[in-house]
Each structure stands twice: as C-alpha cells, then as structure tokens.
Length: 305
Image 1: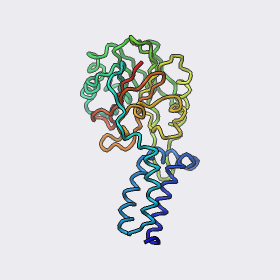
Image 2: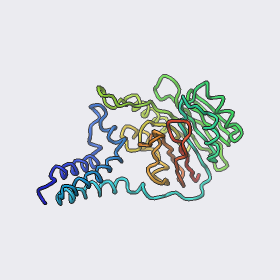
Image 3: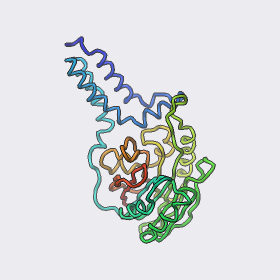
Image 4: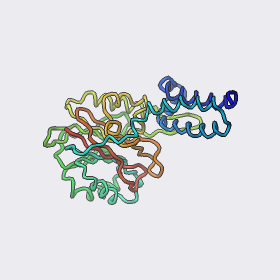
C-alpha cells in the first residue's frame, strides 16, 4: 500500500511546486512563467484527477501527498470562492471587449446600458460598428469620447480626455476625467496587445508586456487620487508581466467579487483577461455580465468614492 503510487505522489509534489514557486519559473524561454501564471488556478484540477488515480491504485502514499497541492491551492485561491460582494456603492462601471466582428452591436450596447453602469468602456471598436454603439448608448449616456479603437460613455460630464500611448503604433488606450457628484475620477480605458501560444515561439507576450509598462507609467503619473482602469489587458492578475499596472491598482473581483470572474472565451471562460481595477476608492461588488455577441464577457463593478 505504501509503495504503490509513487509516481502519482511525485506528480502531486510537482503540481505543488508549480503553484508555490510559479514566480521562479523563468520567462526567458517562451515566456513560460507568464503562461503558467495565466492559467494557474486550473492547476487545482490535478487534485481530483490524481485522487481518482490514487484510489484506483489504492495508494496511501499518493493520497497523503495529495494533501500538499490541495492545501496550497486553497491558500492561493480559496478566498475567491466566497461571495464578498455587498450592496451599495455610489459609482458603477462596466467594461467590455465587444469584438470587432460582433454581429449585434446595438444589442450588445443595450445589454451594457441595462447594467445600470454610470460609465461604460468599450474596446475593439471599429469605424463601421461605432455609429451603432453610439446610437444605442446615447439615450442612457449623454457624454462619450472615443480614441482609436477604445471608447468611454458616461452619465456624467467628461473632461481632459486624451489618448494614452501604450507603444503600439496606433491608439488603443485613453484617459478621461469623469466629473461625478462625489468628486473627479480619472478613468483609463485600455486594450493591450493580444498574446498567442505558438509551438515554435512559446507565449508571444513581448508587445503586451511593453504596453503594460507604458500603461503603468501613465497611471503612476496620474495626479487625481481616484483612478479606475477598465479594459482588456490580455493577462490576469497573477501574470508577473502586468505588475507595472497591477502593483498600483486593486482588482474589484479580488476585493468584492464572487468566484474567479473568468471573462474569456465567452463560450467557455478560462481566464480573467478583462479587468476592472481601482485606486483611491473602495470596491463594493464585482460581477460578470451575461454573454453578448462578443467572444469576451462584459464585467461590471460598484465602488464607493
């Protein structure tokens, strides 16, 4: 009984090591560290799989070894499983990568307006679909601004709107001041470069990482005390490459969400690469909104200014 299942026990130890020492996995070869961190929560699936195999093998050694990854996973991600959302908040925001090939822009816009958000950020806008979004949102949102392929719609006045250079060669980020009854809020809308997993190149995230550095610098230079970042960052809060941004901001999902809040792909969400992050305000609730015509799910969050 004790000598059976040694390989299963070794695999359990390996999974534990990946979760504990993920920050030590180098990015020098194919950005492997960032790739592992993007899908790190899914390492927990190894526990039930190995558990079934350990029972089949009747291995006490493997069963005991499985306590290691189970305890580590709960320590890392168990806090996300509880519902931390509360009622209230005086400022609600929503963000959505609407997908350039969205077959129903008007329907998507109406769904976002129905969320009751005071500010809505859209990414992956096209010149063809923009009029449909603007028309559908105009009834609920008097003010809006668009820069390149990103835009912001607001129930409150906007000022000091400008593009943010995230080193892409074209505009995929903006910054605007939302003038609310509770004070001015700096709202950043960003769509960082896409990443791919290629057999011969690994996790192709270099351009995204450079853009994250530039976005982090812009947020660090922000003079207003209340800041909201909305957008598709093509990375998760666990990904070290987004540290220039995530080290300055607080995730609404981690602070006031229910579950992991995975947003992509919409058909079978596996990662939260869309983000709502705040600074200088208290998250009250965070949620994933129902599917639209996009390959991403929209997000919403309420905060107290």
